[in-house]
Length: 448
Image (cartoon, rainbow, N blue to C red; front, side, top):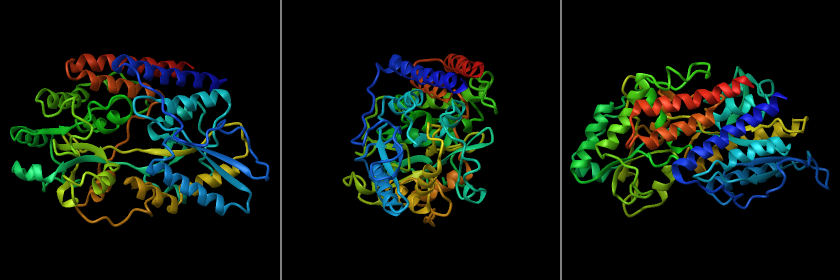
């Protein structure tokens, strides 16, 4: 009964997120299956040849670079486990921007009893998914020695519910030519010695004075998890927070003076016209913007595309997040989890989970995505000063996860609404409203 009530509650949270986005943005379509195998998400356990079928559901398009990397590892698994009569089947359900179709699909599958044996899921949803009993407790299935090989784990109330696919960190990609033309030297700013809020503003002012839009802060990316992921570190850097340590109280945290200071910093950048909601998706890549806030997934684009402005790595660099009270940077990415579906024997699913989180899989997938490997034993010796080095050092020094709360989907929605409202709204009013909405969602889950 707990699973039913918790699942219904979580679906309500997801739908609340969707409705909030519709009210702000006029809606958005669900992602398609991206050319995947489709199917019922896990109802069949054997095929006509006697193979145990393990279904795994991915959040990306099959034709994407990341999707192709997943499929290659699935194909390799099927070859390796042919004699053991275990066969993996990949389902691709693309999580498109502007919608939470993938998350809604998971909730629907849980209620219908059609969950795949393994899913990919965004790490901040661990508490919500574990609380709803969507995820299977793997604490005793993964040895402590193996767990220690990962930078982070998907934990909830002291139990392990998933293993990360890759790690993430983000920063400010910058156009070196634009900076040289403006006489800006940022060589002193490193992950070990980040710049301050005021130094960041000073660089923005210099860029603006040279007729350049200073920075794409991604404040327009509020239809999915992009803005919460990239912008939450500014609140931590200002000494703010969102919820209590147990994730159950928003009042006094989400609307605190320190949290307001972090959001005010972003609002100041908007008010000074250093950034805006109207920056084009490719404006940084075409030389119209000086800096671009993004994660490691942008590295392959800069290495392989936009040659007119970025012929080589001599033309661009990566700067860390600025700090105020403390240094803070984005972390947390997508993970794998065995689901609490109707298959009580998790033996085959565990084999696939271990395969997909192996050193070989970690290396293959991060080579395709440009992200940091989830496993410490796969991380390369990056050249000091390289973008990969900066991302890794930030992860180690200042990486701080998004708030852990059973109502994370609602938190994500309220954060997006605050960012969307900063252009014209009062920070305190926006945060009080966000606090109330989040607390109501938390209380609803607690009451179940």
